[in-house]
Image (cartoon, rainbow, N blue to C red):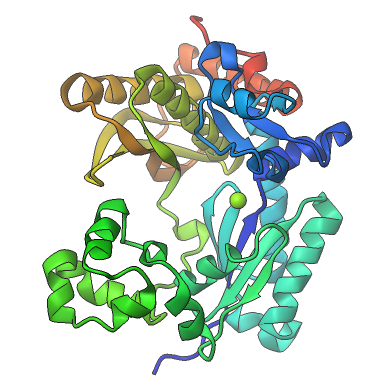
Length: 387
Ligand SMILES: [Mg+2]
């Protein structure tokens, strides 16, 4: 038996759209879609809960979103502002525990097991974090509390927005059993379809099937998936200093085939990742693109950079090169696209060039100026053209 752990998963509600509603009070309670404008083949990066009621979702072409929701307000992406707020949220997390694992700009796991003696029950800690985010920042978060990461992430999603759901060893099987198998990490669309075909739709049906029978479909994933189906997950919360990468990825509701749309999504991801690198004083040596096809095959393409960097211009160029190369040879409709920066070094540490490259210096100044302008006016306020 492992010791009982108390893991929180905290996920901001409709993060980009909520920040826009926070900064523009006239948008509160209204349908807000954040992303590129429809004329520029833009896509929805995030939308408010009010917009979701009309069927709008992220990664949807903006032109389609504005058709579904003609009265909605389209706001430009202001990544630097979201990163700024994300940092404030992380400060709040760190007031409670050093064991914080950021998953993305608006999500993190916290292991609060060691804080209980000092700060009250895990539930109290979770409620206090939620309260502090609301009071100090003005945004709502959904919180899941559970004995492990898988269940905590599941819990935070069960009662969005502004939710607080606790999954315990006592109620976990009852909650899991009713859910569709697609809620288990590692069961994608294709696997889910195969299992559905043989009558396995719920987690209850899955765990009542013999492992030997399942192995024909799940192969070497069988044990892991059956463990998850019983709410067993022993992975640790990995703190930020141990984090080896910063990444952004999106799963699309419908597969995307259009090159321009994918490139636009990629650009947004590079902007997000590079802004986070700068905000956390990291530079990256290795970047990776992740592409998942409609049949769930996933490939990654990596590139090691000549010099570590966190400059958007350089990272975007490299990412586009990788993308174009992939597109030329193995393009296909994608259900997921992601961009990650790994092999991180702290800025100012590691190898220094004897003379700094004046070109690189120029781009650095451009980035910090753009970070400031974007905070106010959004990513579209300054389009990266030729310099
Ligand atoms: Mg979120």
